[in-house]
Each structure stands twice: as C-alpha cells, then as structure tokens.
Image 1 (cartoon, one colour):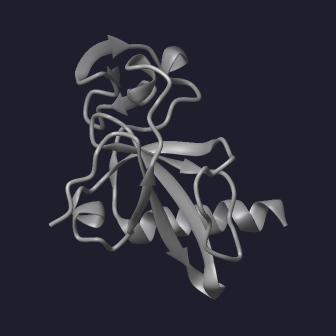
Image 2 (spheres, one colour):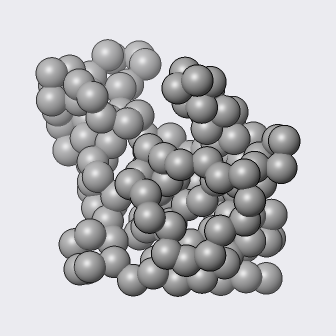
Length: 136
C-alpha cells in the first residue's frame, strides 16, 4: 500500500488519453491543477489549482492515481487547504471547516467557498471533464 505524503504529485488518467494532475494537501485534501494534458507530464506541473477538495484516501493509497513525484509547499501554512463551507440540511445553519476545526459561520461568509465533502475518483474526473467542456 502506498502512503501519500503532503506535497506528492499524482496523475489522473482521463478519457481520450488525456491526463490531469493533483497535489496532496494536509487534512485529506488535494488540489487539482487547472490544466489537462494530451500526454503524460514530468514535474514540475506549471499550473494553478482549479479546485481543492477532500479525497477518499484509498484512491492514492491503492495507486489508482499514481504518484509521479513530490513538490514541497513553500511553507507549512500553504500545506493546508483553504476553508470550506458546511450547511446543516436540517437547521440551515452554516459553518466553516478549516485546519481540522469547525466554527459557526454565515451564508455570506460561506459564499464562494468549496462545500466540505469527500470526493470519489469518478466524481473528480466528471468535474474535470465539465470544466474542460465549459472552456471549449
């Protein structure tokens, strides 16, 4: 079993022989780069992140998405994913999740934040594909 480390870069195979890439953050999160490539890439991946989400750990541990290298973050603070939003479906209350902590929030403060969730591989690929199709 593979033990991914913060800063590891992994490859996401996409349909039509294309590839996307991501980077491991702290707190079971990954950043998915905003570029898709028609061939396998070497490091560094010169791109910014399209989105940062929680990811089921078995995807990287199993090698489904192979780790191709390591790029340390510029600081320990940068290793953390940005805050994400949680909306309680029963009460309608909002919270912000950041650095393993949950705190009360408002709808306005959550505006524009990623919803706190853990994603499976097929959903990540679907999101990448949707973003590509919007650009073309």
